[in-house]
Length: 188
Image: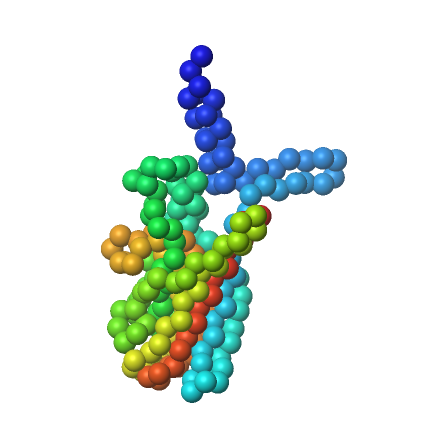
């Protein structure tokens, strides 16, 4: 008997569960399957002092769900993954946006003066449900109303997929200010 058929069925099942969730009911309780959620912390430091801090939920985009599914099914074949290096790039904007599940880019993405898209530091401990991506940007110019961030799987806007996006109260930055974005993605 061909052993690849049962393996293909299992891979398909895992992708379906990861993409759409799996639930079942037992009496009056409903049990939910895989869920992906995010939490973002934004902190600005000026001359060694925290001048701004905000945290809150983010939006996992439709494209983000596709990125996760591709990472799950790719195995050792890196060419079919959304990005074999993962989703660790953070971008910022001064544009007022309303996050939407269909978003694929971060409108008005900053591309200069130390706040351009950059790779964050990835952290995940085995057997835990959280993945953390953190990046500290240092402004080399002034910015008015930095107010949103996106989490991407590429360092260039032309080839990137956006996993998640978040808005926060606008903050003005001057040269030398440091803004740290900490993205925590939880898979439960």
